[in-house]
Image (cartoon, rainbow, N blue to C red):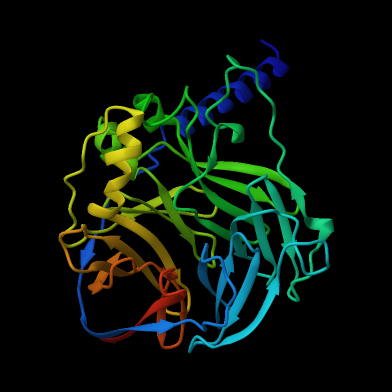
Length: 386
């Protein structure tokens, strides 16, 4: 064997070993440290009515950006900004071809970038970027490219074309990338029809590389153990949601799993932590058919207990996780973690999902009352004693 053969063999062995390690990596480690150290806490929850002069379809979400609340209307494609008391500050965007308008059709999801830019993603795979003055940057906007496949073609489980955006929608950013959660509804690959393959191969998060105008990595291979052999009862509650901290670390949670998984910016697993929410109704109904899913399955979003959101509040260094307890309880729950330690688990109004912080309040997503033609949010004021 000559020197060239030795080098080739060494490279081949290295590649095989690397692939083997990647394939056997445990993406969902069990907690090695899990601390419950609940502190004395006083908190106040009140309701903030958002300025009723807002013209909206009531289809949208609340957010916090630059120390302001905002409501983004998916159908009108507008953003209304408010001060922390709910009074309207200004409105921008809208449908059209002007410098501060969008042709995206409907806003599927959005996020603000570290540089202040706004990224919109539409139902037609359009990605549009707006600068700090909400003028469209056409040089950085693009449409996602999907390969076309014929019926019967085999698609790899790590292919973007196999997935659509998840429910509930999550969109986060880090540097020049935007990340969204996925769902898989292909007839040949989904949790209901192919559960054994799904729990091993599902990719929960898709990256869009904005600087290269292309789809990047598909992250989060597999599902936690709680989903194994439970597709009939856990199908409805199989969504992924996550947040990203300033260092690029991912905090990933699942609707039916009490654990939260932390990954570094390259999506290497670091550790897990988390405790079961109080009084969460886990008696999920078994679904045996598509008809079951559309009927009694979906109805469980209103009746059962599951985790609904995670939000890392950078200013506080806390991770908040909200959860539904189920229809039998008069409140929902909100957990507060510092590092791997649960420091509080409090009662919050039904439907509370944390979306941001403006000192001294933690705000919820929009609660829409179409009957009274109004949008309101809950806000929580926390005081902890160390």
